[in-house]
Image 1 (cartoon, one colour):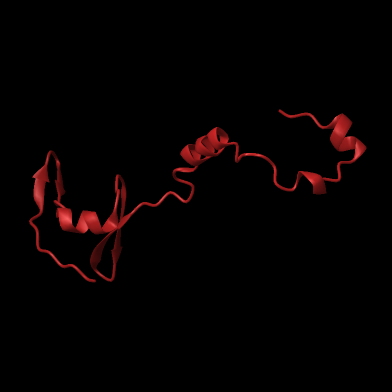
Image 2 (cartoon, rainbow, N blue to C red; image 1 turned 30 degrees about the vertical axis):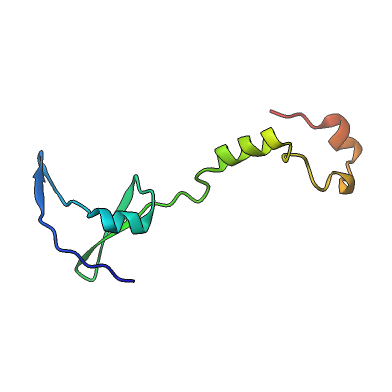
Length: 89
């Protein structure tokens, strides 16, 4: 569904800005940061999506549920070097 809206460009300190209608923000979901670009003489505003956003919280939940174990542990074929010489930094 395409939603179109008209809004005014307003003064914000030494800059100018626009207000984004709630209806449009609701369609995008949680947006805290946007990317601005000019494409074919049009201002394009896109939400910034963090590819790994929320992973920290999900890892914590996995640990709480005990779901953070290595699934392929039986298939590990460690060499002597792996077992004796490797050091974690």
